[in-house]
Image 1 (cartoon, protein in one colour):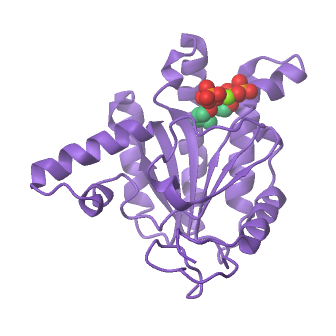
Image 2: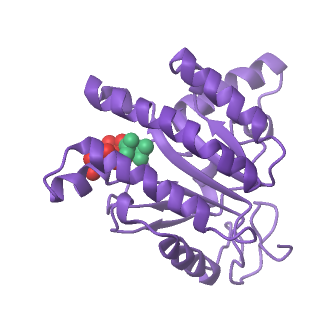
Length: 239
Ligand code: IPE
Ligand code: IPE
Ligand code: MG
């Protein structure tokens, strides 16, 4: 762990990156996965949840300190009411069914984004899940009603209220303040954009865009991504 230059203060020497501590994934392509099979989008989302479960089960405890997953963006409200309802119901089901497993497997759930404005019953479920997993050592951060611009704005407002607006004070007020620095940002489905995800945190993260549609994503894909990351040379602007 000690040789990984994963914060901006280190890593001015040219060298391979070492182990990633924090990887994040834009889980994209559920709709296209379903369309290819002439299935409803809802089935694609269901299979997407299964891919999440498979991944959380599949990562070995030593591999990552934190995995962050983009589950619902602040712009996803623009989708049809039916699709938004389907996604919210899947979230309810997933928390209920998988929470005991998180607790048993030492997972510490974190939620980023404006999640407190989700439906009140979901907020209660999430608060309970956060409390039950508070002592876990493997962080799983889920981005819900998340938008990077909104996160930065909220952090800047809090920093202003505290009377100090600096890069550090804004960073300290981000939803990710208690997560390790972001090392690797992955997006599935072949789209090459951030879609408002982790805009601040991505400043010096390595990026990986893969064509795999999210429901097809397996732990092996993450292993490969982490191997790829380990070969990257991070320079942080220095030489
Ligand atoms: C990602 O899959 C899941 C969410 C955004 C909630 P999409 O639903 O965006 O799938 P595509 O991009 O339409 O294939
Ligand atoms: C980003 O995917 C959000 C999530 C994966 C949760 P989208 O499918 O919403 O992004 P765009 O609309 O293609 O940029
Ligand atoms: Mg999409």
